[in-house]
Length: 378
Image (cartoon, rainbow, N blue to C red):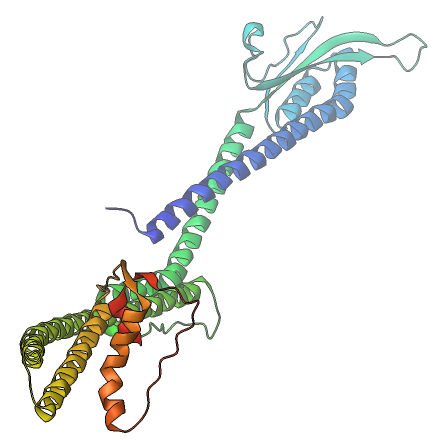
């Protein structure tokens, strides 16, 4: 299970605060250490300027009691751990604290100073002479203890401040970030395809400000609108596809019915018409009276016209279905034109109209093409 955002933020704030606290503590401890060393050095300089001259006079005067009190006064200064006086004295001098061995002085937490006790007789012009040495050691243990307490105080304070900051961040995150994100997630989980028209709105504290959460809500609503539009387009496409399929099926059925009709017409009409034309030709081959011959001729002509009309209709059907094929045969132009004239000659004669066909003399007589289609055009 992945950790929550609030937990990650808490860990990050605590880690960063602890890091900052350690850096701040290290800086302040280092500064305090330098100041502590400077204070100890200042105390040692104070001993050199105030205690050493008087202690040198007391050693010159061999005043045992004042020497001891002077050593006790020096030992009362802060962080002083050892005070002793050496020299050619006829009596033992009190030593306060144990001196650090020479081989451990480099690693021991102490500052060592040795002051020469120089005395010049004010009543003579003789130069100052050394009457002894003052050994002073200042321990750094107290300074280290104070620095340790300071470091713990700084770290504890920074951690408490980081904890308070993390708590405030968690509260703000839950109120302004996590709760809106949870609402967005719940809305996304509960949204169905029939609810895409319901936009997401958040009741957030803080007025009408615009931040990243509002941008996320707008992006979610835009995605919902885009998804709805895509679904509507897909439904429209599917509807058009179904309509196209229905139209295609209707067109196929219509074509099938049309082909069946033309096939039926070709068989049921052309067969008897050919029979009528054939019988009329046989009848005209016999000797008939003028009036019966004229009637049979009209029947033959009308039959041929009706057969030509049927052929035209069948050709139109072939053109519609893309199955019409043009022939490429030799024919004479006069025969073609005579056939066209024969179709209408009887009708023209019945109306008392004279029909004349004028063919240019330079017209070619033998042609290559489809005489039947040219006959239909004429």
